[in-house]
Amino acid sequence: MPYLHKFGPNDVLKNRLTTKPQFTFSMYSGSAYLNESRNDGISTGSVNLFEINPGRLSQSFNVIYPFRVKNGDYLRPMGVSKVEYTETELGEQMIGSAILTSSIERYYIPALANPYDPVHGGPPIWGSSFYTPTRAESLPVNIPANQEDHIVENYFRRRKKIIALRNTLNDNKILSPTFDYAYYSGSTVNLLSIPSILFGSGIDPGSVSLKFYYSGSLIDEAKDMRRNGQLISVGSGSNTSGSVVGSVLYNQGFILLTSSYAIAPSYDNYLFTIEDGGPEQFKASWLYFGAYISGSNWEDDGCSSAASQPSYPPGGFPSASSYALAFRGTTTTPMMTMFATAQAQDATNSQNPTWISSSEGGWTASSSFGSGSYQERRYAKITNFSQNQYADYDSPFEKQAFIESIGIYDKDKNLLGVAKLATPVLKKQKDQFTFKITLDM
Image (tube, rainbow, N blue to C red):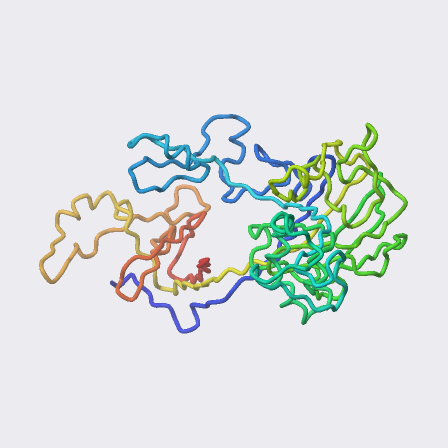
């Protein structure tokens, strides 16, 4: 194929593009905002997974929905429950959720002693050894036998998220001793979970910043100054200034805050509890960072015993406190860059039928082809569309064409893709152009 031009040895480059987009969550009085903007038709502070239906949900028309016809293969669209699938008849259409969103989540996990801890009844200390035996091993003798199942179930249900991070925390002890799981196993933890759709392959180390506001004034800020996952208070007027208030798991997207020291003599209804007929106030601390939703951030113990259920009546939103969480994600995209060069005296033929002059109207009928050749009429007149600035004057004929697309072929001459130009480029015999084509793989 004479119109195919082979890439040179330096015309195809393969590399990786790493981007670090900045994200900021602002949280106040029941609402969260991502990058200081309101989302159209989805929950505040959420990101749309595939950016589907932007601007459509608020208008309630032309909304894109995933669907599937039930045929007995037990597959159902996202958003269709098992019950709905069972109730759907064969051949009927199942409509899934219009959008898939995700946002940060916060869990306030109160202190609870590990029933298997040899020193039962008190939280472990920094650097202490910690060991969790199997269920078959005996519990400490100070736990009544009739309460054994309840205490064990209560602990593991309420601390399941921290227990799941045990190996991850211990693996990060090479960075800082504050990642020791022994500290988190029984103490109060304020856990923030960031979905991977935001940070990609990992949060950029050192980019996390947590700001705690009270009545519109910044009372403390925590940052990873050493890029090792330690969140250090840097607020000049804070009571915790200079101390470690939590940790960051950059690859997994978790922030664990453990500092219970009062940041400032400021009170708010962080735990959403009612005391003597009114909201119970607590001093601001990093344990309460991100408490902006009324009564929905508790990690319920899930225990079947009603006596063990703590009372969390909704006491309204914290009215004076607001929070800001900022970080950078890391996204790596494999890329291929190709340089297609149209040399001078080349690529000036066109396959547009109007390229041949109208006076040569029968040129296609005179073309001949056989099993081994294809031949067109020689010396067919080409339309002269050279332009000049003079009236009633025809410029001398100059062979030229407009390049509007570039095809990419493999070694077997199979078309793999087509790169289209936004505006066709005029190519004359004397011109040489190099087109840069970028492909995300």
